[in-house]
Image (cartoon, rainbow, N blue to C red; front, side, top):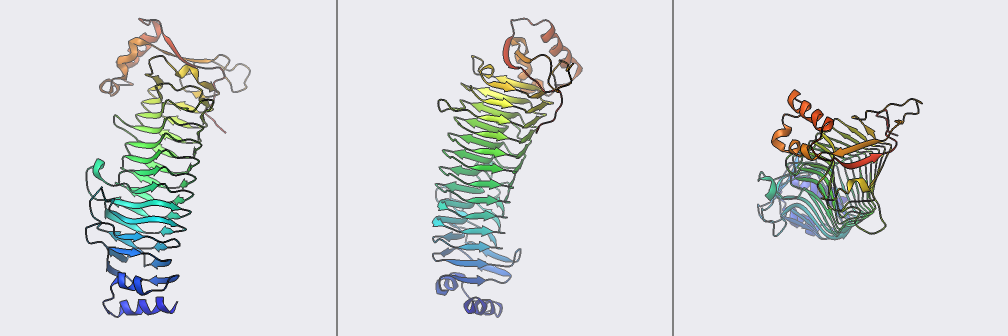
Length: 404
């Protein structure tokens, strides 16, 4: 503790202390308290330390090449710092903070700006990334770095981080992580998983990204209580499953997206299933889009309301009907409930009319809801030009839009 107090005094009195030399001289297990001001990166921490500053006042500025803070030790805490001006090389993964081959590290309450990647975790376990604000360099979306990147990193907590105009939040080859209460705005993939398992994704908010949450080649994960809004454009997806098995997608709100849910060859593993239940799928162009072979999902007690198309299947053989649909609320259900049990007396059945395909043209969708389109839609149902194909049957549709 005496070391930390002496260092604060030395910096405040203008002794011109070089931050890297301070770190090198400080014994392992110490706490370095930095005052307000600008300190020069790039720095390397290779021993257990606490490096803390005054939030909004203490700046560590990189030299425009490489990573601003590199952590190569377990039991390191970095908190309440503003970190800026990394390099711009994707090959090197230039970042604000890079942690490599470590455990029990914490990055808390930091502002990371004008860096290519934000926080990069490579082979990092049992660590906490909490309460940080991260934004990338002002590059086009595709060549920004990822706000947070996990690579072979397990059992971490990533909570209450705000990613703004970065590229992706990436979880690759990483298992057992808790990702909750984060915000992602104006990015590409607000959360992207590949080859990951047993992760928990809870109570996050993702707005105005190209894609909300996309799970690829992954399994055994729960996503619940998330809000995904305005994932637009040709790739606009709220939650996507690609070769994903044994997932629970529960209690999420997905609204104003091009596609609410996108399901591609999921579940993938034999004799597995995915449970999609208790979600609010609202005001999307397509509620659920099935692509390729996707069967044996349980789709239960969801609310489908205000979607231009409730379900769309482009798999060629119509696999949507081969999933288990039960007790969902459909705002276009036309049945009644004579016994008052809250369940419709007749099943909800959705058909695919070949002469309505042109309505899925993005240029035509702009006019959806207009009197002309409404009339054409009505005529297609009343007198279809071809034999309709059944997309799904929900034998017990809910009458009221209430879910447990």
